[in-house]
Length: 347
Ligand SMILES: [Zn+2]
Image 1 (tube, rainbow, N blue to C red):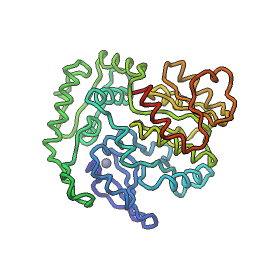
Image 2 (spheres, protein in one colour):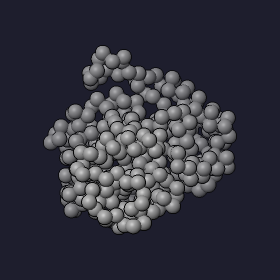
Image 3 (cartoon, helix red, strand yellow):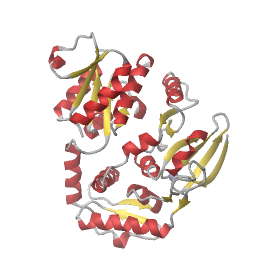
Image 4 (tube, rainbow, N blue to C red):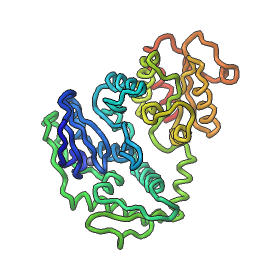
């Protein structure tokens, strides 16, 4: 492994970069994008302008007091699962990989201008140390925060040529950033930022109206593209997990499996937060798992739509047996039926 400092291929900040000869991959630790790895077959993802905001909003960064083992990677899902299992058994050699590909990134990406604005407000509020405190962003962080495209992509003929994109001019990107910032100010969501906008970045402070909007969004089920999945996790349920993931992805949403984003054994504030921020929850009750029952109950209490799945022949707890459930015989039944159900009840 060799450590060099060079431009992050996603955001152009100076990033630590390690070549991993064993996996034919390059590992980056970027101050804006966090820890991520591009494998040889994943280099094309660099053409995706959605990747920079995706990494920024979901980044894994080393904390001051604790090491971070998680990282985003384009390596295959199966290998990610293997390494994650090793990690859970105490072998940290390959860390805790979280798979990403174009579908994952595009499904996460806000579908409209107003969804972007909502995401920006939630991000700024979560970064403010105390209410009303300003948050500093350097230029690269600001571009990712504001969903500004950094790359000019070729029409399509050159794909999948590795270097076929060009970086947009800095001044064009910054103009676009100011356009979004102006909107935030005109709507009264942020304080006047102009005197705090410098060559190198910007300082943003939410107004009371901005905080009120954040409160509203966090209560409202229509925010976001994430769907939390509650089920039994383990090697015996990997096929089930992938079937559910496919059903959710095909419907245009992003499946969140809590063991892929947090290390947890049981219910934690993080889990509750993921449920609150999900547009809906998918629960598989086949294994009569207490956690899954709890998560379903919590989601229902918040008024989130819940889609139930269960293997045919399993008896459901009487409280929820009345609820319309997708009964599946084999995992192959799941993706199409789940996609249809999501489109019929959520969209
Ligand atoms: Zn970066």
